Amino acid sequence: MEDKGISKEQVYQMLREYKEKDLTHRSGRILGSMCTCPHPVGVRAYSMFLESNLGDPGLFPGTKALEDEVITILGGLLGKKDVHGHIITGGTEANLMAMRAARNMRNLDNPEIIVPKSAHFSFKKASDMLCLDLKMADLDEDYRMDTSSVEELISDNTVAIVGVAGTTELGKIDPIADLSKICMDNDIYFHVDAAFGGYTIPFLKEAGYDLPEFDFSLPGVSSMTIDPHKMGLAPIPTGGILFRKHEYLEAIAVETPYLTEDLQSTVVGTRTGAATAATWALLKHLGREGYREVATHCMEITHKLAEGVKEAGFELVTEPELNIVPFHSSEIPVKEIARRLEAKGWAVSLASYPRAIRVIVMPHLKEEHVDAFIRDLKEI
Ligand code: 0PR
Image 1 (cartoon, rainbow, N blue to C red):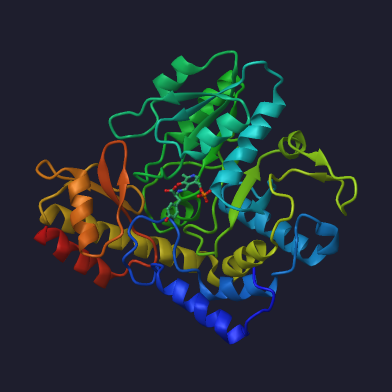
Image 2 (image 1 turned 120 degrees about the horizontal axis):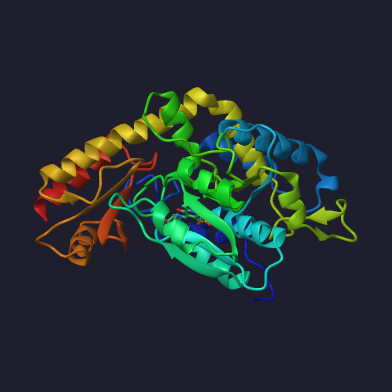
């Protein structure tokens, strides 16, 4: 570190040079991200609350009121207004909190959790950090969690079962209603990871899409992850965790001797209020109608892309249920497809099971980007 500082103009110029090396979502070239260009209303709201710390909410009662309202609105969106939760850093922290609650509700020596093979790697972190034995349930022929495999894995040590509503690689929705029943019958905590699907499934249903039940309207669902920084268009880092009962939050609370609150349940201590302000602003500004348009537009582009992929001679791994298009080819290995697409300037990502290219049709992907992508796909 230099002794004497440099001018702010110099600093900004240097930052611009670094920034130029980054890809942008706006370019339409990022095809494998669940993040997108943050909506300007969310950005403005975020910047208004930069100094607010929800880790010490007594100092920021206005921001705390916003968080309470956001949790109620998200709960209403997911089938239960009177839920309890927080706006946090993202899906990983939400899943960690849920697994911690499930574990702490029981006092077992060798706790186990059952997740589908398609679960996000945050559950591997959770199992490592929380000393949970991770049991992976098989998927059915349509890449959804196989309920008979789940039933075989249940033991006296099972503290939680996880279902995913919008899987990371393929965008599939696990049979949440069946899993809810299995959890009720066996008195097991049930977490639904709707980090990706939470902001789309309800709106697509409203728009007439035939999608299954997946939320708190199912009595077995104990908690849900829903990420505003994915399909909610909020700036990074903004995640959401919702619990059916307050006692789950209590199960992960620690005493905070000198703060303005007595107990804290989040993993992160000092916690930005800006994410909450952005989430609130976007829920108010876009409303159901705005989010319905975002979700349905992404699905229209998804279907167009899926058709184009087939026309270009590639095979879909599965018909898209949400806005992810996974495909491969019997002639060209997946890694080689990725290499050729990268050479043409596309930032693609790979699905591991089954091996495929996965394109996540986020709101920054416009029709012209998809047209250009399909042209390149035909050439390779
Ligand atoms: N649950 C699900 C279903 C997810 O898909 C993800 C992340 C998480 C939890 C964890 O969320 P956070 O990353 O917010 O903690 N899914 C994407 C993935 O890992 C995240 C992502 C976003 C990846 C942007 C790449 C990227 O450019 O693939």
